[in-house]
Length: 460
Image 1 (cartoon, helix red, strand yellow):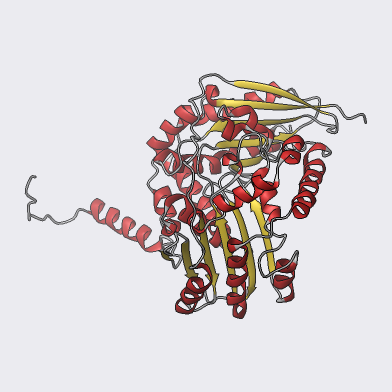
Image 2 (cartoon, helix red, strand yellow):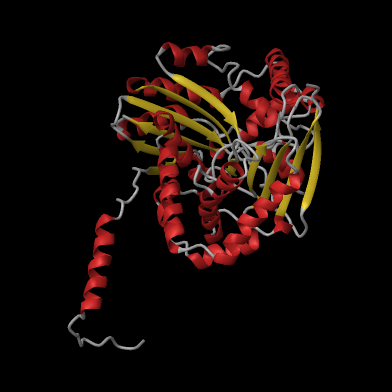
């Protein structure tokens, strides 16, 4: 390595001005984003994340299981979602619906959901009820009340949900349920994860018992506590209530890989209840946590997020083809952080019948071509950074701490590193105009795209 000379020279007026400018920029840079994170594991494999926050006298308890739509058994589509419902049907010490009543009668709120790569349950309660919530979550992790009566009841509930939300709705399942099935090739990424009615009917009591024993084990889960609590006391309760739950033998992870798409795909779907056409586009994303992944997050801000985005300006403001354009990375079922596997960058819009679908696709091509030809300037990149930083803060502050718990649980499950929540901003700041250009060329090419058009059939 060459030695470094100690010789110094007096600064010129130009270098002095440059130095002052750099110092001014540095002094006005936003403070580093920092969330308190304490992470450890119990002997049974349960991942535990503690994040104290004294802002308000409430706590959020979130239990995330590493089982989602993608890896449910073949011929049992919708099983992960069905099981989400089963978790509210009672456990060893809490009867049917008593878990919900326990939370609500103590002034709290709760919910559960199924996503591509996890199923989650959370409660937000007054801070002094933390122990109660930990006991209740451990009780159903330890022993769910799996009966034929409960299974039959929830099969009916889920089938009715499918009918109400998808089969009997205009644009039902568009594009969040439809597009993955059209754009992907691997069954795990491309099946009807809400559930075919026949598959839901076919689920047996033995299926449910095996599913619970395998996937709802502590070594397949993350427990997150966010809010106003004493970490030492919380650790004691976590060990007391969760420490004795047995771990399970987990199956080998499913192969989720998707082949590189080399040709554009276009599909049309008739919708008997829709009265206007709709169009969705999807591009396969770069692998999660890669430099191009962060670049795509910034391109999403430039192209699709907000009224200042290129597609909103071109399709809504300039041409009036539609009233709005929505979408993003994992936009309909989460955010760009809480998934683990192949993903799509998607957008969708409903438009008037006198507008040709090709006109919309041409606008999309033109806006991407503008970025390819002109590049992304540092000024545009800085603006996108401001937007994504704002979006990240919005996510973290969502629903009294649940947004923060969601990211911590996802990063614990998928990366074994919940502190990654504090690294996101720095990763986005590493993105250069050159990397943006490379990402546009590789991932926003037409041959990496799937188009889905809804053909309206409703009689007006």
